[in-house]
Amino acid sequence: MENSLMVIAVGGGGLNVAKFISKTAKEAKRNINLFAIDTEEDDLMSSGLDNKILIQDENSTEEVEGKLNPHLGGVKIGVVISALGGRTGSTLTPQIAKLLHEHKIASLCIVTTPFALEGKDAASRALNSIVQILECHSTLVQKSNESLAKEMGTLSLVAVFQYFDAKIADLVFAINDASLQGKESLIIPILQEGKEFEGDDLKDMFTKI
Image 1 (cartoon, rainbow, N blue to C red):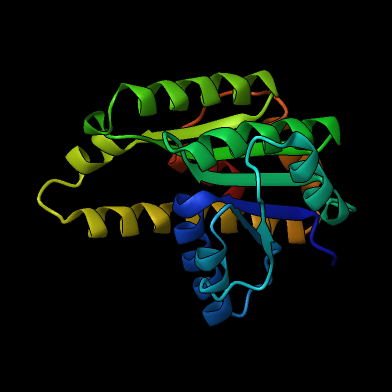
Image 2 (tube, helix red, strand yellow):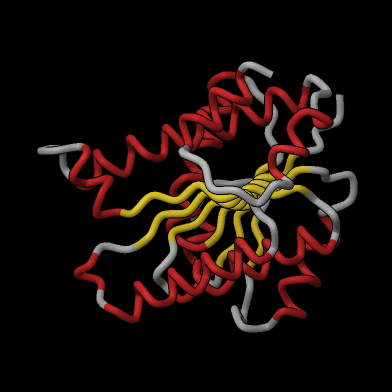
């Protein structure tokens, strides 16, 4: 069955998750429609991912639309993954959410928000991005880096983020499997409500569909 799900990893934070998802999918021989979009060409080219989209100007809505539109045919569900706070993730993620909404594609945005030590500008960019995402009626799963680190106790930051990458991958695969089983009609209404969920709750919901 054709996969109606598109996973879009945005910026450096999204790219790290995308590499984990791609590796896991290949090891398990699972098909997933995965794209990475970034403004850093070197990071994209060295990622090893099959579908890469380079954006020259993160503020150009026309460029983002022009490069994503050709890949949206047949897509009914979009999952956008990014780390907010930096300029690329904070700028591109709401643009992509808006584009999916305009194409009547049900969307889920999975995002992390910055540590307090990253400063007020990063926090402000992340908050503004979340407001715009929710305005696009996207369902949202967000986790602050601060709370994630506290929950994981004495683990290194690398281990903390690897753990969260795995949690995101579990959620994405739950949606992907349901989509491949032709259950879009059960997934889409949930994602069209534009609500905020805990990642594990959403994963359990899609696993039981």
